[in-house]
Image 1: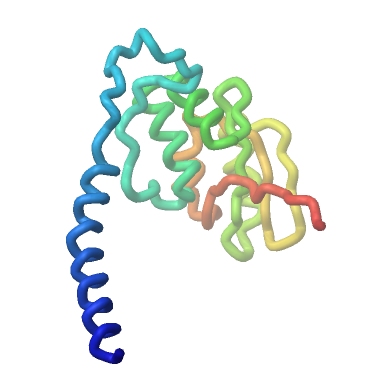
Image 2 (image 1 turned 45 degrees about the vertical axis):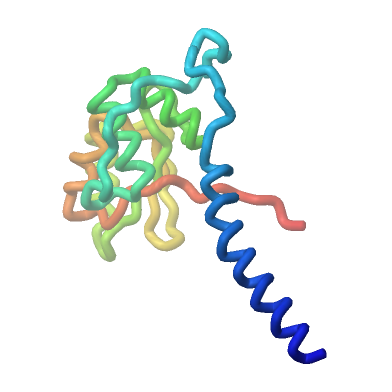
Length: 161
């Protein structure tokens, strides 16, 4: 009986080795769906998005860097589309950000944020953070300030279960 089980095991392994590549290639094929875009409903988020950078701009987190890049390359419409897709708060081409301050440079960082024309500025004494709505056109110049460590998106709050 041991020989029969070995034989069945070998046959099973051979079948798996032969059938798996065939199944994978079948699953990878399309099912003759029409390429006619007239048959599909238009998505409100489809905009010809600009090529976004692979690495974030120095001093920015990846999402902030990408929305700034979308704004620079495609204007307000591209930035608005990116914001909607990624759940980023965007008001009149101003994005809600958290500015992390270099240690001991709180006053200089506050002045740098004020110079951008930011609105709704909230200064926190916890971990030297500033929350503000900053114009997209001013994010990179703010990131270049020596008083600023990082500009990032606010952390989304989740209810406790």
